[in-house]
Length: 397
Ligand SMILES: Cc1ncc(COP(=O)(O)O)c(C=O)c1O
Image (cartoon, rainbow, N blue to C red; front, side, top):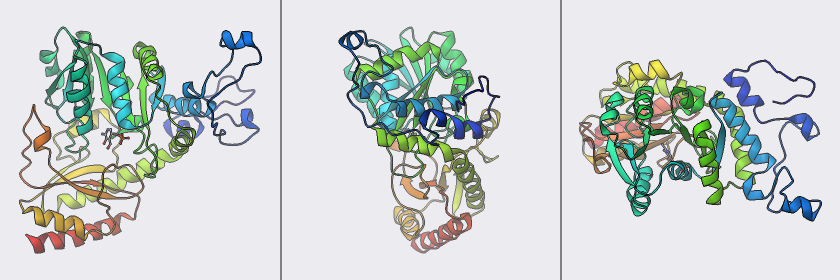
């Protein structure tokens, strides 16, 4: 937060940055929050000024004090390696803008087999039309990614952990191998956010978040963000500007408002999620819980080494049962909604099956799979709800 008469404020920790970033009350008549600029045209005081673009702002699409406030707040969370943050109208738009900022015709990209399905569809559809090839790789490949890097490989895309299957990736090892061969690293960091994983500090060049999830936090916003290091910021900014991508002022403001409470919300999602995950691990109906913060998880060592927390999203593998039993479980839940997305204040549960999505690895979890998002309800109420679900599961088995 800028404060007059204090030229060098002390360094701030994350919780403080969440509150202070992108705010300057004294520049806004003392009001705590910046105004929401609904803007397209910006007028100049003279024809000469107009022709010379002499003005802090040029056009609504290219940035307003509101969008700059959100960019500043997010950049502060990423740390010193962040050279800029682009705002996009959705998380998927952030993924596609990040890719388009680093690839050109004839390029090759490596994408984790665990990537969010629409990310794969972007690679298999639009990128193919523009002459860009994708090779999918095992998310657990680590430094072995080196063997897949070709002379034309421009980017390695990671999503850690995968948002359905929760495989952890060795991001620093992948980044070291990619950089050694001239490739950039793009990461979908929505699960941990920079609060629990400072992607740029771990070697990532472009760190993507679906702001729809925890930045918004209230299931009422579509937003995407890409944070870039110095090597990638110029190309990213040019790409976003050239394509005319921008976020409306009210959605930008909702993002900014969400940032202020993101830390405490995430802490609660983390604590409640872990409690439910431990409880589920002890249930007779459950074969495995896919949550990297559990010691039994194959990705736990990487999570412990690199992450400082977890969000409320994880999955469970149920003991073998007909589909009708899994549906009975989900349909019996009253506190968990059945729907896409995650990161809001409310709990969600969906059935999923990655078999048709994988090309580099086989998906054989050994039982039906369900993804849970643990919201901000009382955690014991959520456990009681799941207990009701398991009674319905057993009855239908
Ligand atoms: C991991 C991940 N990345 C990106 C997205 C896309 O975000 P949005 O829905 O904001 O386009 C999602 C949405 O579910 C997601 O789960």
